[in-house]
Amino acid sequence: MKCPFCNPNEEAVLYEDGLIRILLDSYPASRGHLLVVPRRHVESWWELSGEEKAALIRGMELAMEKLKEVLKPDAFNVGMNLGREAGQTVPHLHLHVIPRWKGDCAHPRGGVRKAVLDLEDENLSLKERWVKNRLSGEEVERLREAFGQHFE
Ligand SMILES: [Zn+2]
Picture 1 (cartoon, helix red, strand yellow):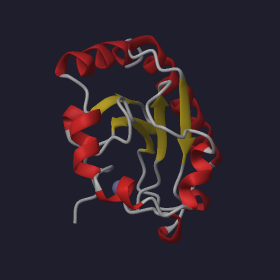
Picture 2 (tube, rainbow, N blue to C red):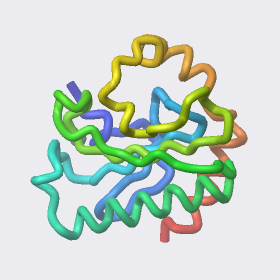
Picture 3 (cartoon, protein in one colour):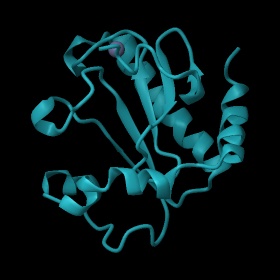
Picture 4 (cartoon, rainbow, N blue to C red):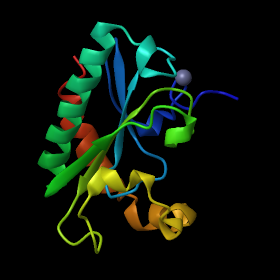
C-alpha cells in the first residue's frame, strides 16, 4: 500500500520544506485539523534525527500560527500516537494539530488525557465528523495562501 504521507494528495499539502510537510487531515477531528509529518518515511519517534525533531516542532508552531490567522480557534490539542497500542494507524510518524473552539464539545476537560478512554461514539462516527468538520473550499484556499508565504 502506498504511504499516504510519503505520497500525499496534492490538495492536502499546505506546506513543505526539505524536512517536513503540513497536511490537511483526511478525517478531521475538528475544523482545520492539520498533520505535521517528516518528509522521510519514519515510523517511530526514535528513528528521527535531531534536525527532524526540531523541524516537527517548528511545523507545529507554524501550523498553529496559520490556523490562528485564518480560522481563529480558541485553543489547540497537539499530540502524537506513537505505536499501534497508542492508536497509531498510519506507520509514518505524524503530529496532530487540532484547533479547538469554545463549545465544540460538551466536556473538553482532560483534553488529550481522554486518549485512553473508550469513546465509541467518537470513534465510530468518523464519516459524520468528517462531514461536520471539513473546511469549505474557500477556507482551504485561505489557509493555503497563509502558508504560501513560507514556501520560498
Ligand atoms: Zn511514509
